Length: 524
Ligand code: ADP
Ligand code: MG
Image 1 (cartoon, rainbow, N blue to C red):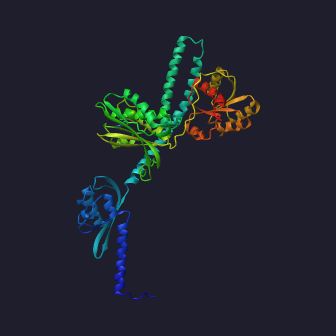
Image 2 (image 1 turned 45 degrees about the horizontal axis):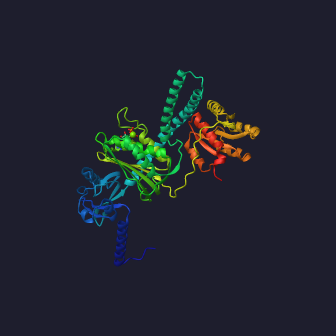
Image 3 (image 1 turned 60 degrees about the vertical axis):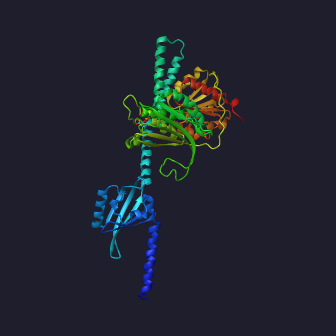
C-alpha cells in the first residue's frame, strides 16, 4: 500500500525537523567539523568542538580559505588536498599536524567528503584530535622497550651475581687463614677489591632492571634531601648554585634511602654536566601532589593517587627530541668517551620503578631541563620497625640445615658457617632437605635456603612446612631477585630473615647470629 500523499506543509515540517536534527549533531559532535564551499574552498561553517580545539572564533574562520588560516601550517599541502578533494570527492589523512591559535601543535585525523546540499557542492571535513593518543602510544612503546632491555640486563646481571657471590665467599675464606704469606694476602686483597668492583657494576645493572634487592622503610623525603644537600654542595662545582628549601610538612614515602640518594645524586650530576662549563642554577624541590584521572591522561606509567614529587631542574643545555627518546636506556650517552657511562638515568629509572613510581622529563634546548620523580606517598606515617643493634659477630654452636642447588656455593657457605663454629647439614634441593629434616628435625635450629630451587618448591614453602613440625625453627632465605622477596615480605614470618646476594662471610655470619638471637629481641 502506498503512503498517503503528503501535504506541502508536512514535507516542509519534515525538512525543518531534519535540519534541526542535523544542526544538533553538528553542534554536539565530539569531533571537529568544518564545512567548506567546494567551489571556492571558503569556510561556510565550523562546529564548537573545532573552535575549541584550535582556539579560533567562528567569525575568524568564516569566509576564509583553508590555507589562509594558521592551523594548516603547510599551505602547499592544504592546496593540494583541496584540489584532490575536488577531483576525488574524498580525502583522508591519518596523521596531520595542525597548529592551534596559541601555537600548540595538535595531531589530527582528517577525513573529508564532498557532497551536494541544495544544488550547492560542499565539503565536510571531520577533524579528530589524536594528540593524546599518539603521545600515549609513543610512551607505551618506550615502556615496552625498557622492559625488554631491563630483562636482558637483569638476566646477565643475575648470573654474574651468583658467580660473584661464590668468588667473594672463597676470597674472604682464604683471607681468614692466619698462616697466609704477606705477598699472597696482598694479592688476595686486590682480587677481593676487584670482585667488589664487579659486584658494584652488577648492582647498577640490577638497579636498572629492577631486580636489585631493596629495603623499604617509611622515611621523610625532606629529611633525606636535607642530609644529602650538604654532601652535594661539596661534590658539585662551585659554579653550580644549588637551591633547596626543605618543606615544613613531612613527605612520607616507603623507600630505600640509599637508593633515593642515588637518584638525586645522579640527577644533580647530569644537571651539572648540562650546565658546564659556565654553571647555573640547580633547583631541588619536593612536594605532595594529588593526581586525578585528567592528570595521568597522557602518561601510561602514571596512576591516580597521592604522590610525593621530587623535581630536579637545571638551566643547562636542554635536550632535543632524539635524546629525549633514548635517555633512560642503559649505556645511552651523548657525552664523550670516558665522560659518560650512560647508566645514570637508567638507574634513576630502575630505582623509581621499583619504588612504584615513574619519571617525567620536560626540557627545552638551550633553556634547561626538569626531571620529576613521582613516588607513592605513604599517608599514615608507619612506625619503622625497631632496628636490631649491630652486634659484633659472635660465633655459635647451633645446627644449620643448608639448602642450595649450586654445589660450589653450598660448599663455600658451609665452610664459612663452620668457621664461625656452626654445625652444618647440607641438602641440594627441597626433596633432600625434607629427608634430612625427617631424620634430624630435633637438632636443626635454622634453615638457610635459596629462595629459588629446582623441583618447584620455594625456600619459603620449605620453611613453612618445617616450621609446622617445629615452631622454634628460624629461617634465612637468600635470593638475588628482589621481586620474590618483595612479594613474600608481606607474608613474612617473624622468624625469617632475607639475605640478599651477593654477600661475604661476615654478612653471612652476622645474619645467622641475628636470626638465631631473634626470639629474645622481637616483640610479643
Ligand atoms: P651519562 O650522564 O653517563 O651520559 P645518563 O644516563 O645519566 O648518562 O644520561 C644520559 C644522557 O641524557 C646524557 O648523556 C645527556 O645527553 C642526557 N641528559 C641527562 N640529564 C640531562 C640534563 N639535565 N640536561 C641535558 N641532558 C641531559
Ligand atoms: Mg649521568
